[in-house]
Image 1 (tube, rainbow, N blue to C red):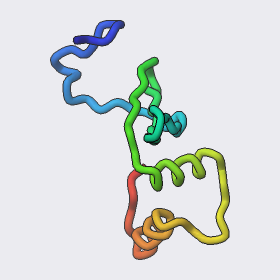
Image 2: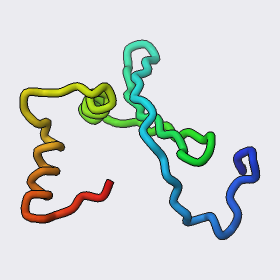
Image 3: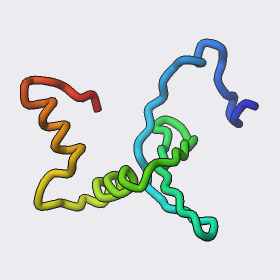
Length: 91
């Protein structure tokens, strides 16, 4: 099934698209809660919803909300460890 607006041609099949994190949401269906990250396409109107773990949802939501902590979170600490000897982490 192709999305509205033309879809992807044969040459576009393996082309990566650029997205940005729009929001992190929690949804419930009674007793269960699921956390999701919503990605918005930069050059379009498509959205991608991905289920993530509660720890990742917490970290992303805090980052999106500009929450500052007294000490770095684990993922921030690990990123600094990689960068310190001249390593790079792509955006």
